[in-house]
Image (cartoon, rainbow, N blue to C red; front, side):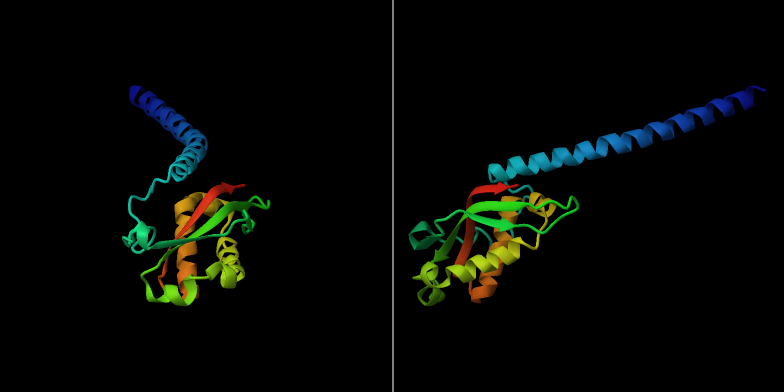
Length: 175
């Protein structure tokens, strides 16, 4: 009789354990995702790379000095529409775009000297297409630096050159 009673108690504890585990899964995991998203937002605000490594050739990892850098800033604040996500709402990235170029690169003479005067609409179109491929959730996961790297790759592909070595966003807002 005692062995059956112990088996019933063990079975009851097992059922309670499964129920508590299910409750924890549905309450802790969404809160954890929100915490991770918050950490990513804070890290992008202070420009930390949460992945720990920067991709080769992105940002200022090429070692271009400020003396060899030309900056082209699109003066007006730009609004880029994001692809609709799971929530079905419209989301946007609002920022001012600056393009940093290596003046020692041979392609700088071809494209860079008057890039905004002749290619601004092409650049904005490429950035709009690139950013528009991502949903709000994707942009949150990438962060500002990740989105800048993606835009940099697209511009380097567009011009067929690496004379553009960084894309910078200021006043970066995702809404």
